[in-house]
Image 1: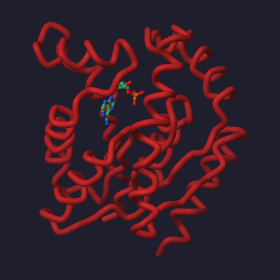
Image 2: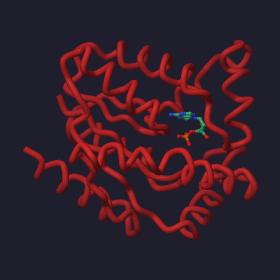
Image 3: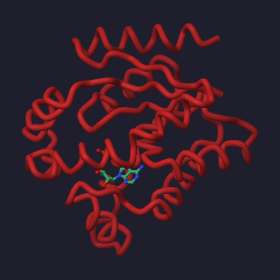
Length: 190
Ligand code: AMP
């Protein structure tokens, strides 16, 4: 299986690049952010999740890990999975390793998109126009998401680096250029 963790701060291009990876390598694509946004808004789970996400905070690990495992189980015959926006804490990364090991597989590589903070802010504000996402439109929430990334999520890259699985990709350039860099990195794995 090709299990790719597509990693990077908010606005790095994970969703856009996931769509291309999914097509090219015939993978399942799991975005925990999309899953949270897709919950029935009247459900208790949706209300709980949005009490965190609306402020730009992380949804607690226990809930997120359970959601993720449920999503993976929906793709029993997948050739592999792109994990987009998960894991975002070291506890989530440990849970993913354990979960995949129980299925006889593992994370193949983490691909980390590297984008400077100023560029992220510009991209998120522009994305708000089309995404309609309230968490993209408010500069204070954007800043909180970036700070949360730096404090809680960036250490996850070290977790995979220690396993020799981290690939860093320059995430600045045209969408096609970045796709080509990612495809090049994946094609050189085997
Ligand atoms: P995203 O679409 O990846 O930017 O995620 C939107 C929001 O969903 C985040 O700001 C978090 O509140 C929540 N979220 C998504 N993925 C996770 C995760 N792996 N852990 C905790 N919260 C998450």
